[in-house]
Image (cartoon, rainbow, N blue to C red):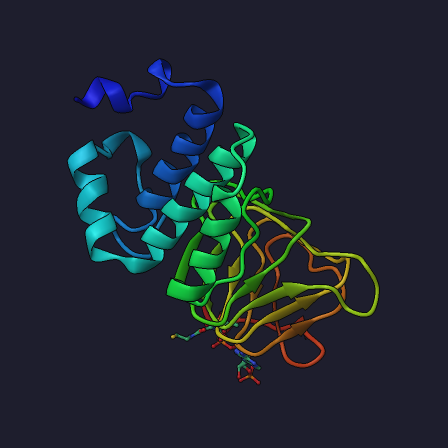
Length: 192
Ligand SMILES: CC(C)(COP(=O)(O)OP(=O)(O)OC[C@H]1O[C@@H](n2cnc3c(N)ncnc32)[C@H](O)[C@@H]1OP(=O)(O)O)[C@@H](O)C(=O)NCCC(=O)NCCS
């Protein structure tokens, strides 16, 4: 059975999305950490899916995106509506989202980035969206977004940056920097 789930035996599009879903699942081995994808067996993935509704939301997203890539009509938009109805999550099926997206609490999150990197952490009620133009944010790898964070317009949030709870990001955030406030500005963490 496991060989059926081995990406080497799959259609390339399905395989790509399956690998991304495995990265998503690896974020839930220990919630929020970046787990070891190679340690994931099918039984562990099924167990994580059973325990964590936000991971199930990601599974629907990956499935919808894979079907969209395969040219299946109708089902991806049904999946999109399902994400909103069941999980309160707005994330466009087919959007450029790296593996390992960890959404602690999907309800009320609107994640419309130009692209979202790998192993991004979103806590709750987060918005990635336009400001007053048609530009969407670019979200770097291993970034963190606290509860209620908003990232608006064509800004870049650099690799490893952290955005504090309720911050409103209107300018680029340099890699590794922590920002907070409205509008968001760099802060100096007391630790780390
Ligand atoms: C931004 C964040 C990641 C920084 O954490 P940290 O590196 O430990 O930073 P510190 O707590 O040492 O705070 C450093 C300074 O920034 C301020 N600060 C921290 N988070 C802030 C925020 N969200 N908004 C405004 N100021 C903030 C602190 O008051 C402190 O200011 P001071 O130097 O004047 O005392 C964290 O505060 C945060 O917002 N995390 C989100 C948590 C969350 O979403 N929880 C919901 C769970 S359901």
